[in-house]
Length: 61
Image: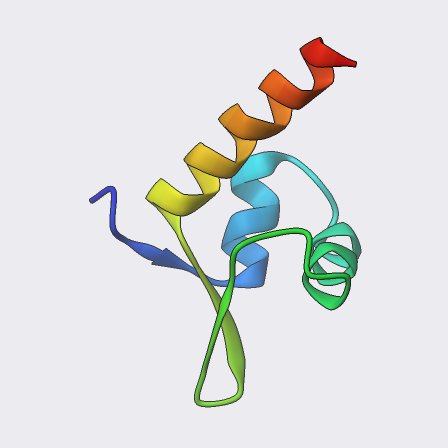
């Protein structure tokens, strides 16, 4: 299930953030995303890697 795709609503719930935050990340190209038939989709394994990388960057600063 690691390769499962999530919608914006599912991703917001998964990351415990508002949907508007996810839209902001997408619009500013800050999060890995794919557009499928006009709708944004997010691979769970890519999101998990993105979160891990973000934590590493935060520790460096």
